[in-house]
Length: 334
Image (cartoon, rainbow, N blue to C red; front, side, top):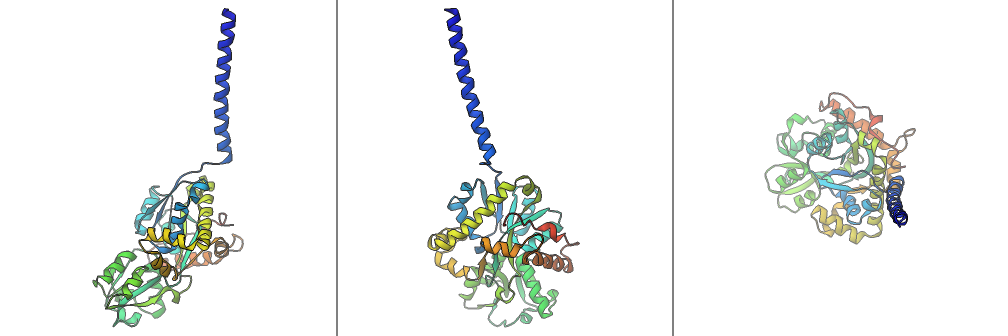
């Protein structure tokens, strides 16, 4: 009987060991399949061109593709860059020239996907008596002077007209705050974006002096990420990019619902958002392949990144030009 009892006890141990072994095997299979990838915190501003990111979040594309993405609203480029350097976020959406400044500031980043191109979505609003850029001399102009799309574009336009930035009474504000300051009649002009362009037009005293459609391609947004994160977590980055492409397809085929989702994130009604979107061009998968090109045959993104490096060096915002070839990773959009 003692022998029989021992055999029963031994059988139970073997059964438990078998169950334990099965659980371990299932976990190993999941890891082998790559079902879980690293989490990503992404810094984003309230800009309509980033709207599809909220579609990807709302419709579960991030989760479906196996990546946990947290969208963190951060309006200031400086705040996003500081957070990236401290690894509080792993990437952020901004304009190409902004990522150039990050790289030149020893924040090692690489661009992985293009989001949009401003084609009228950015602009300069001004009091109605101001008719040209030259009329801005001596006037209070709200513009973010520590880098970023608005400043880059504004300096680009002034240079085209031969106007010295020192002749402008610049008031340092983010694009959103600049638009709000103008609508509140606190400055003579502002370099801002939608929805502030529309709001400025609706004031009794303001008008839109010009928009970014006068300079196609100059203001292009991408997501740049920490190089070490990209190197260690290529599956997570690939999932992020794939989710953007799927969000873009959803926008094309389910426009009414897409506008609802994006409008909620932007604080606009679907109708207002649809009007704002007229001023930008969103990059889908095909658009990304075109603007990125390949490492052997680079697309427009390479020349735009080079322009940003040369321009900011000339303006003394950076003290050296980063290596443009190292600022672009072509692999995730191909």
